[in-house]
Image (tube, rainbow, N blue to C red; front, side, top):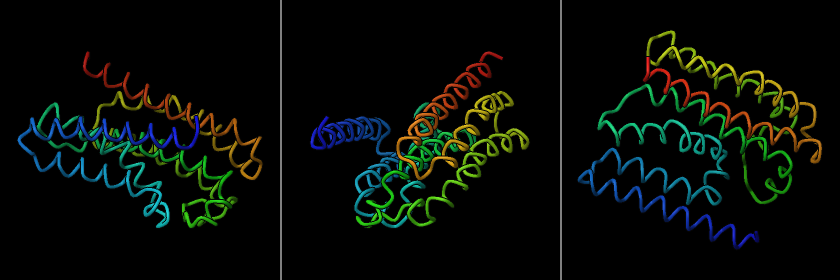
Length: 212
């Protein structure tokens, strides 16, 4: 697909998402919580390239959008209540999703720096960024474990640890090949699969919790 086609598809999906969000805002009588969530999501998507990526917070904003805010919004629509549980469960997914963006930044770091995109890999340098990936992924598992220990989420959430070896393998691939475009491709694919596996495990965990 051409860059123009990608842009058009992205705009179409953005418009669709905003339309769905606007419908729920209307159905919930313009609930301020939903308005805030929708406004943050729309703002962060529209300003990613011209603003947040240049400020070095693109990964953080992406992680928030596709993790805790996504789950919190879904939870709120169904229950009309706010809770810390969807935030705790959403954070690992957000961190992993941001991790996909993070790993994909390595091959384009030089071009991104020239374009003014001051993302984490550009700020830290490839070597440091590669070594810090392990800590970033570790936090994705530490958060639900801490949530279980304090009783904020179901013990079934510990099922997420099954994907930890995959995450460790991904970190090793990136650390070994961070400056080699072709050799880094398996690491990029592994990051995607780790994220998908983590999401499936959390889905199974809460399905099991609902049956318990």
